[in-house]
Every structure is written in structure tokens, then in C-alpha cells.
Length: 579
Ligand code: ATP
Ligand code: MG
Image (cartoon, rainbow, N blue to C red; front, side, top):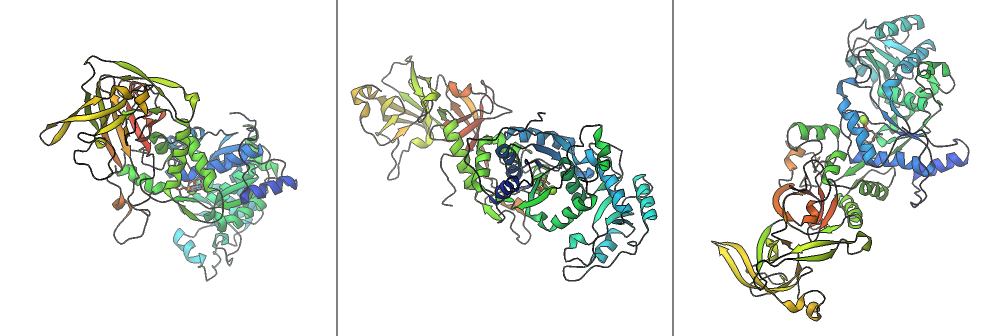
């Protein structure tokens, strides 16, 4: 991976949220010469759109200020972690458009963490405690009552050191002892009431295998990882605000920046770097309505078969958003638009959809497709008639060029564009009425052929004076509809996706109910349609606007030119606004 920071991004408008203000001050005052940030996922699940906010923030700062950004796997909890997630997370970060300066694991630093723990013991700042988890809870006190000192708090340094070494050597079973920081059992901040730094867990680790049977706790490992990497601004979500005093305690008391001997285990691997004192800054999490975002709930949706997998196009995972066709640029735009603050808020799903529309409208070529086909025969053209029409690929951007669209007398149109008994204000095709076929001319419906109750075919005449380029081409009719030539169109599977939940707050607390009860039964409809040849030939993952239907994307796994599969990424308009 490249070690040089990405160049500062000069084209984008300057962002000025409170974190960037702090960074500008720190750079101006000389407190830091450059920024160094990191994105620290735990590899216990797939990334979701909430993580995208954090990725765009950390990597965005790197780009704007020209500083390196690390990808660090926060892998201190071996029982729940898996290399499958590690690989997916790397792929997702790159897909979002970012690259890291260095790839690290908290587990790369296990030896340093351990030396740091011995240092705290030797300094009388940590002790081995034999209380059970339940007793620890009991001694901890409450928000209104101070805690009580553990009877093991006064153990001598030599005994603590001996016990810590024997914990590491595997002499004790899981949960028998912990290493605790000696801070203040009466602190108003419960996180400072002698928090655990290490626990015993005889579980193999996805990165270090069987090397360890004691594992560091999150707060200790996170603070030291940031310090080891010389992270200047450690950005995390608001629920860690109360942990900041402990974060600072770990950074200050281990003092890696002043005690490079502790970094010796990393020298050989070239990972010792410039240890520094990092500063933690909290921002609000992203919450979006009509979805659930906790990894636990997403995992349950997958495991219970309520969705087709992590990359089900209805999932808010980055894999799901990608499969659906969400352009990474739309997620970056979304992150910019929601901004960064300390206010918790719930973002409307339509804000995301709006970003997708905006990006796809500019980037997606236009094509013709019919998803609910009805045959229309033009009776006043010879049966073998065939033409090649030229259509613009983008109404607002000539650089997209033109394409050839085959036309013949037998067409597919949308069933919805014809009504035998139309309501008032229906401006498309009706018996005896006229409509414009996009790029062809005006047709009149002379005859409706039915099989039983079902309309099977419309027989129409084309007004030859209304063909493009002729003087009659401007003749006014109220409606214009799209079509594909039946002889040339390619049969396609079209997957019409919609929101996964029918209620804005599927996480609501309601007696005897869970988010599972609010799944939208119409969130996916599979239909057989027809697409013009130039759509069938699009590459997997290519985005397209099917005129009048919406923005679609060729499915990245299943689409083939001879068996096209398109996912509806987003409708043309917000269809939920009125609901
Ligand atoms: P979840 O609660 O969904 O399981 P997590 O916080 O446990 O997520 P991590 O892998 O620990 O997931 O998160 C990696 C980084 O992404 C952290 O810095 C975390 O704060 C950030 N992050 C996670 N969810 C969100 C969110 N909804 N909005 C903004 N940042 C988030
Ligand atoms: Mg977490």
C-alpha cells in the first residue's frame, strides 16, 4: 500500500464542521504538523451505511489536509471476529473510493499492550483482581453511589506482576482474574472505577492464533493503538464521550510517546512509527429511518433468512447498497450532505435516495425497457419492416453520444400505458385514442384484441406525417410512451426493490413485536421484461436510466448480455413522500 498521503482535494468546496475547525486550529497553532486519522472497524460483521459516514470523515480529512489514514482492524474480541469480514471490509473501503496508508490490526500490538500492562503494574497503577464478574459489578456502585475498593486493590507490585505473567502463561481459567487499572472507585464517571484492562479468554484469534489467552479490553487497546500509530485526531461516535477520560488516562499513564522501549516489539516489523498523544473527538452517529443498522440485527436478518444475504440489495450494508447499484459517489455526497455534528438526529431515507438520483441522473445513460409488457402492432407498416433509429444517450449531456435503437412494427409497451376504461386525466393510450411513441411518431389505437378478460394486443396505425423530421412531427398529443421492438428486445429479469421496512421506526419498542414484524412484503418484486439490445450489453454494475421507469443497475453477480438482470436502484421520483 502506498505510504504517501493522498493529495489535498482542491476541487471540492471547503467543509467547516466542528472537527475540521479543531483540525485547522491544531495545524495553525503548530500543535500538529499534519493530520493522521484512522478508520477502526471491528471485523465482526459487514460494514453498513453508518460506517460509511465514519469512513468518509476519516478518509475525507486525510484527503483535504494531505494526511495519511490507516485502516485498523479493532480485533480484540476473538470470539466474534472472522477473516471473512476482514476481506469484505477492505473491499468496501476501496469501493467507496478510499485507500489507506497502512493496514494495521490492534492484534499487531498485543505484545506492546502487554508491556504497557506490566509497566502500569510496576508503577502501581494496575492490579490483578480475583473478583468474579458478578462481584465486580457489585463493587462498582451506581450512578448515585460510589463503588467500593476491591479487596485485591492493595496487592503488592511483585505479586501483581507474578499473577499477570501467570495469566499470560495460561495458568488460570477464563474469568478467574482480570487486570484492572487503579484509578478511582468513587469517581463520578463509572468508566474510571478501576476498569478492566485485560481478561482471560482461552479462544484462538483470527490474526494471532493460539499465541494469547489474555486479551486487552477495548478502551485500553483503542487508546494505545491510536498512540502507537501517532493518530492526531481519534474520531469516534458520541457513545464514547464518557470513555474519553479513560482513553486519556491510558494514553497519559502508558506514555508511549515518551517511552519508546515499549515499542521495541514493533521495530522489526517496521511498525514502531512516531508514537504521539492522540486526541479523541466524538461526533453523532448516523441513523436513518425505514432501516435497522446494528450489526446484531443485520446478522439476524441474514441468519433467519429474512433477506437473501449480506449483499441483499435491500440491506443497508455497503455490500447490499453496492449490489442494488448505489454509486459510491452517491454515498460520499450523502455523507457531505448530512455533515458532522454532535447533535443526534434521524436522517430521512429520502435524503439518501435523493443523492442516488442526483448522481445517477448525471452519470447514467438512458435506455428503453418495458417491465410489464403488452404487445402493440402497427398495422400500416409492412410485416417485415425494420428501421434503425438514433437516440440520444443523455438528454442533458451530449458527451454521452447517441446509439442505434431498432424499430419494427411489433412492439412491447408498458401495460400501464394503456387503459380500456381510462379515468379522467389519463393521457396515454385508450381505445380510439392517440399517443406518441417516443422517437417514432403518433399512433392511434384502432382495435383491442382480448383473450378472455385480458388485453392481449393493441392494433394501431402510425400517422406517417408525424415521423421525426417531418413537418407534422410537432403535432400535439398529450402523452408520450416508451417501447421496445419485440423482434430485437432481449428478455430480462428485472428486480424491483423498495424499502425493507414499512414503518419509519422499525426499532420501535412495542409490546411483543420486533423489527421483523415491520418488513415490507413488497420490498422486492421479480418481473420478466424486455430491454433494448444496447441495455442488454451493459457491463455488470453499470447504471442506467430506463426512461420513465427509474434508475437501474445491471446485477453484479447475475447479469449476462444474453440473460440480462437489472436491479431497480431508485425510482425516478420519491414515491413515499405522500405515504
Ligand atoms: P454497530 O453498533 O453497528 O455494530 P460498531 O460501532 O460496533 O457498529 P465498529 O466496527 O466498532 O462498529 O465501528 C467502526 C467505526 O465506525 C467506529 O469508529 C464507529 O464509531 C463508526 N460507526 C459505526 N456505526 C456508525 C454510525 N451509525 N454512524 C457513524 N459512525 C459509525
Ligand atoms: Mg464497536
